[in-house]
Length: 416
Image (cartoon, rainbow, N blue to C red; front, side, top):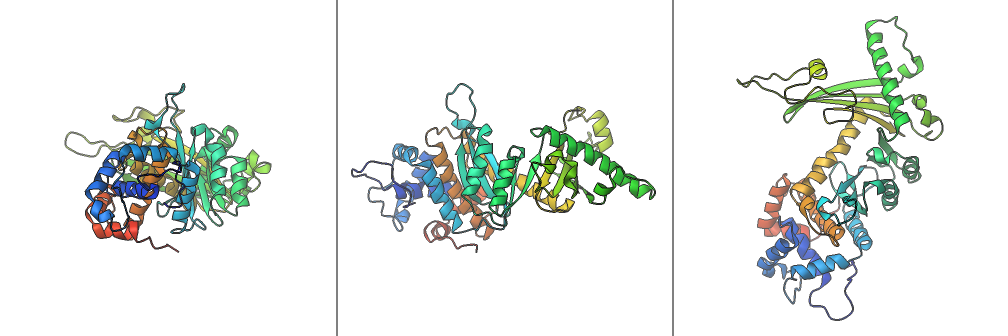
């Protein structure tokens, strides 16, 4: 925190800026997820904190902390965060998921009332945040993703992003940094999306008929030889989920691979159907099968309409990669990417109350304070030093002096 420039003028200040930032992180670690509650917790633990920090004038007031966060250079603070986490984890040779998150309560009173966004780069294996970049709104993600990646060493890493990141310039940026990509193709790439749905639908049909009849001649013999599909079924919470993953390593089926995307080596299609579990008055399971659900719907869900392939219950997503992948590998990478929603976004909104934070001018720097606390908690969970549920881990940090000493004031051991 000492490396973060103090934005206040040169005259004598009452509270050291680095000490204020450390106190905020310590408070958030203990589950006090507002500036006021965080500093109040620090006042109660002042004697303990003075073992590690001078705190000559005690704990700063909430208004002082707010002014400090509002004045700190957002870009420099983000770079210091990246340097800190970069000493703990390596961004080379990992699965790096890039995804944006809205700060809904941080909307300014502007004409379109669009929520500001933060673009996050997350290690899919550990859930640790490697970097963040504030952006004005979701439309700015296309320009921001290459800028974020330039700040990271992604050699040998697999970068994944939602369909908004499926842009030629982003693919070229990843490859120029010696990384790999697996990107989603949806209706924002209408031609490629329609071609994937069409060709994979026909190849899937040919695949089934070839198994039934050895003499059947498929429509695309060259593609069929490099085609593969798998299916999965699982019970997830209160719904049955059916997933199909299919890949083809003959990429000439896409018009864009012949000119704009010559580096694409695998094209895939992921299809998912979610059927809500239903029970009768006696508690018996009466969940409809796939055929019945698609034809009639269910009591909890109406019949899915034809254009709902990207809706909540039925999803079809195209995928492309510069690597030669099996259907199993592509399905695993896709699921790991969307696990970021539960491991990071949901935690920030549920445990850290980010979606309810009314901060305006300090919203991005306050988001970094949360990321410092989030990463420390995630590391403690990985080492098995606290509970696996984030809110319970916060309770452990609030109650355990030795835990705070180990992860806040003694330095964190590097993963590599």
